[in-house]
Structure formats: C-alpha cells, structure tokens
Image 1 (spheres, rainbow over the protein chains, first blue to last red):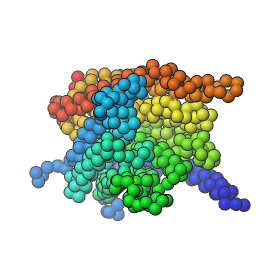
Image 2: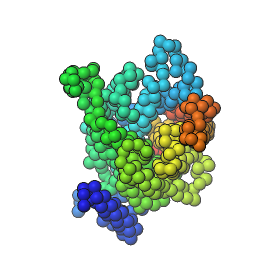
Image 3: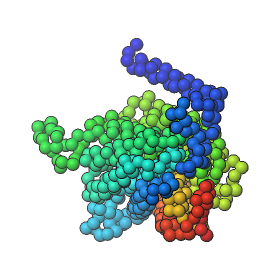
Image 4: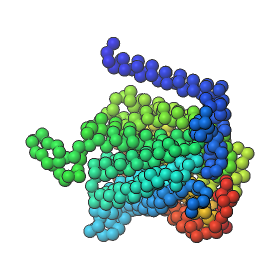
Length: 67
Length: 497
C-alpha cells in the first residue's frame, strides 16, 4: 500500500469518525435536553431576550463562585 | 457620577457604525461605477484620459471588493460585536478601562489601515491576489488590528456575568479564529528586496513589494481555500451571529430551537473549510480535491439551511410582525436570501453545472444575491435595531425604511436575474461549436449579446445604492429624532412616521 492509498483510507476513516461524532452530538442534545449545569438548552434564548444589564443571567458566573 | 447605575457603553459600537455607513457608500458607489463601465466602456475614462489610470475598471475593482468586504462588512461585524457582546454577556465596556481603551485603539488603528489600503490600491500597489491585494506592511498592520479585536472578544468574555456563551458569541469567536488562520496562511509572502533572482540580482523592486511564498497550483489552492472561507468567516458566520441576536430581540420571540442552532454551528464549522476547491474545478489541481470541493459544497446546504430555517421558524405564529415592521422585513428577506444563495452555490459547485457557470457572470450574480440580499440587509437591519438604543432616540422614519426596503429588493432582483441570464448565455455561447469542433462564436459576439443585461445590472446596483443612501440619511436623522424612554426599547424598535 503506497502513501496515497493510506491517505485515502485515513481520510475516509476520519470522515466517518467525524460523522459519528456529529450524529452523536445530535443524539446527545435531543436526549439530554439539559446541559451539565442542568439548564434546559432552550432557556439559553433568554440570554438575548433578557439582556439588560440588571436582568438576571440564565446561569450566573457568580453562582459558581458561591459553590 | 458616583451613584449612576451601570449602563452598557456603546462608544466603540457607534464609531464602527460610522465606518460601516461611510465605507458602505464608498464600496457600493465604486461598484455601481464598475457596473456601468462594463456596460458602457466610455465610463472608464470618465474623468479624462489623464486620470484614466485611476478610474479604469482594473484599478477600481479591488477597491470595490475590499471596501465592501473589509470596510463595510468588517465594520458592521465590529460594530455589532461591541453592541451584542456586552449585552449577551451582561457586562459593560464601562467596567473595564483596559477593554474600553483596546476598543478605541482597535477603531483608530483600523481607520489607519483603511486609509493605507485606499491610498495603496488607488496607487496601484497590489500583490495581485484576489481579496488579498494588500502588500506586506499593511498585512502586518491588519494582523495587529485583528489581534486587538481578539483581545476585546476574549477580554469581555473574561469579565462576563453570564456563565454560558450565547450562540452569537460562538459565531463571533469562529469569525475571529477563522479569519486569523486564513489571513495568516494566505498572506505568507517574501519582500522582493530580500530575495535573489536566478541571475543573482538582489534588492529587487520597491521595499513594499512582495511575492507569495507559494507558487503555481499550490498558490491557487491556498488562495481559494482563503477566498472561499473569507466568504465563510466574513459573509456567513458573523452575519449568522447577528441574526441570532437581532431577530429574536426585535421580534421578542425565543429562537425556535436553540439546540438546532448549536448543531448548525458545528455542522458549518465542520463542512465549510473543505468546500473551497469548487473554485478550481477543471483546473490543474488534483481531481480528488475538485470532487471533494463539490461534495462538501452540496453537504453545506444542511447547516446553512439549519440556521436559516431556525430563523424563519422563530417567526412562527408571529408573521404579522413581518408585515408590520420594515426592520423585520429586512431580516426575514435576508434570511431567505441566505437560503437562496446557499442553495445556488452548491448547484454551481456541481461539476456539470460548473462547466457552464465557471468564469461567467452567473458567479458574479451568486455573490451579489448573497452579499446584497443577505449580508447587506442583515447589517443594515442590525444598525437600524441598534440606532434607537445607542442614541436613545426613535428611528427617524418608518416609511423611509419601508421605501428603502422595496427599492433595494427590486435592485437585488434586477441584479441577480440579469446575471443569471447573462451568465448562462455566456456559458452556452462559449461552449457552442459546429460538427468539426470549431467554436460557433467569438468572444465579442458574447459581449454584444450581454450588453442589455449589463445595463440592467447597473440599474439594479444603482437602486441598491440609492436605498443605502436612504439608510444613511435615516440613521443620521435618528441622532436628532424624538428621545425615547428605556421601556420602549425592550423589543420592537420605536419608529417615527
């Protein structure tokens, strides 16, 4: 097997791997619904809708510090 | 001043709003002149033979592309970043003297680079690489400006109150990283003065001249990897960042599916970088690379439509807003043009279609329905949304905005339809031959046939420019319109008659 063939197999393999990762990510998003902080992904839209400086953050940095 | 409540500070956003508008006018005006030069060659010497060097098509063309890409669009990106960034991270620029200073340095240095670019391109100093015409001293200055932009982004993220990064921020970060990588690698060049020719000469050319570090096919490959992805990370990614913020905010609707936005983001990042090969179909680059460019271009429909459909579905049940608000019209039509050009691009990238489309005006049409319909509309919509909030005044005129919308939409439609017809006519005529393989037409035959379409394109461009001047006037008048209260700025932007 020459180098070009190896590259071709490597490239094909990488593509398949990345496709699996991407579909895995889709599956994860739609089954878990929430991220590691327990916040529903859809709640993050509020970061744009409630974005005044005195609005309460969806998940605050300072909450972390208190833990 | 001690007890004043904390507010977002839009100083830098306002500065970049100004350059967005001025450089937009410059870039679009030159574009219109170029369009009429193609239709009526006499326009090339409109200021007389003596100044023909500065007014001919080839001198002005890079000024048009660079003013629109690196002037109008980039200023729009910077301006919206300094607005959106603060808001979704819930932190004010006023809280950090360092970030405020960096933002101002960012603006002034950017302005110096713009001046250097305008002077050098008018003088005819160029590397002759499309969209990368700047010579090495300017390239270095560009890198400095970009690094400062990056420091602003990550600096603001560093002092944020909101723990998670809103989807727009992801797109802004991708813009920063993407352009940084592309610009550095494509602009690798050696000043000619440092080189030595085969004949042993040294110190060749002026101090500012340079040659690319890549040669031949490799240079073409790097150039189009850059060129296509400049479209990706300049005209797509940051504009998606804008619509993900401004459409939900203006309409008061949560994004239809936040999960879909995350998914489309990674899809776009994964696919886009591989598609540049489609610019080199039927050239001397390896065949597998051309095929890969085609395939990835077609796959690219998925993440692009993922974002676009997500935006259209955000308006679900709220379509009366599209009828009522010209600002939302701009965004919805922008999103629709995004879907349209991300379908058109992959079609052109299919090898058999490309056999007709390559080198024709259809490509020019494709670029412009994307840039006029999607990038231009979205940046103007963003500035319209920002204007009442940064000036604390209502938008001067809603009816002027509506008139502008329809004039520009007509302009875009005239532009791309004329270029479709011109491009396909060109492609077919170039290929036509008799039974012995002799070409049926000479080049000048196509020029004669295309003349009416070139004229229509010029008119379309002119309409768009007129609309842009209306936009500039509307924003200018907004600065002295009726002052508004904070509660009027929650969602739909306040507009005067």
